[in-house]
Length: 468
Image (cartoon, rainbow, N blue to C red):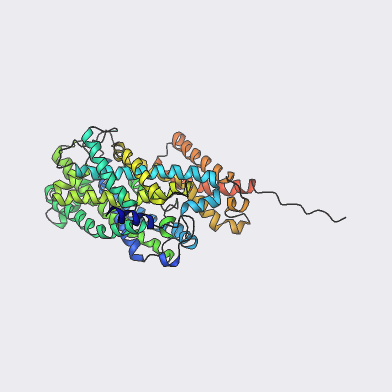
């Protein structure tokens, strides 16, 4: 058995530094399953309840999610997927051609670390369900560090299983998501419908009055900030900014037969980031009602209360379907730094880092802020790729500059990244713009900076010697 497993690992080929061959392209169904599985997942058991905790109103939530998720789908379809299908290489190899080896190495390490933290939060979510039979103390909204040895041991066990799945490569990750996604969606819906009578919903006509008065009341919990329509719209749009505007999913869509596969992200946005967020918010509202607004925050017990062991299993698998592709992406980022290493070995190391991070509950409790920060940090590089691909040929500027010049660092790209993030920090500090809103002005700042700095650092043309 062990020999066959090792042989399977050695056979994994992810084409890290070459275009995907036609024989390895995936069907639209593959992307539907992966996006539905990844985005109907562990994060949904956290984000939906956090909207309740932050006092989102029912009207703001419904319309904010409708429009925000639409903008996210369009970002995948028109920004990320076309370049991915045309180039058929990973984000990391593309950046190396544009930014140079040195700058890309820094980016890859930052990206991998962010991926590790995101995957770690999902391992922690799954651990809240695994720990139910062992009566493990659950984390609270105010917790930052591990509260018990039993919590740490549970997280480690979940992390090991998740990492082993991710080491098998994209095909296995996609297959796992395809199998799990339909079942998870049904569990989310069943759990929400099961607990609605406890809130006073006994008919369809009862739902909206109860939604406004008992679920999304517009009143935040103690110590939590107030969320408006604009918070919800921009969060729904930008919570995956690193993937679409930041171009991280170039590494996924390079397997697509057509750029139109970008629209398959709608399966994740409207099943996961819409229905599942609403459903998990309902579950959390029941928990708050029964616990008199307790600060305990553990998706596993909440789902278990609604539909028993099925709910707990759903939380576990939901955590895996988010953590698996995220660890896979992190492995690709690190593998780009050390290209001669085998992908599965790098993914294993990344999984160990992820599991360590998962021990800290702060990753879950501050998930909204973290995913916003994560997308913001990586966004400027996505803007650089977009402009380099679409605009530079028209401006007579050199595309893939590092490759063309042989330089190890593209200073125009480095300046764009650093100055954009500094500008966003200043906008936040001096104008009070919250992190959820910084991605939009930040993208335009990055575009203008990269074009301007590329002109300023453009090599001078070689003068031809005069004829004597």
